[in-house]
Image (tube, rainbow, N blue to C red; front, side):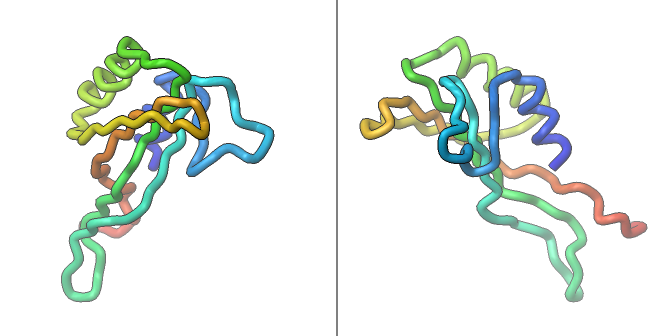
Length: 112
């Protein structure tokens, strides 16, 4: 997931896998990301091509179209095709914009 981490670091807002530890959540904006599944190409009992499902959750305390556009432009620049949904989370008083996409995994070191 080196490519994903590079994208998140370049974007420049705090990020964590799944969630921040209790009491360590930064002020918005921030991102939580998940790898909830995979869609690997498998044949003959072997994974030939790794594809990981990725979910990026961008949290802001108010609608920030400029920040969303900046993240979308970055995903476009990396050639990532994504789906996008958004929601207001009343209990947290935060907007969540969810980006879902597939990302190729790292080479497993096996020769082709």
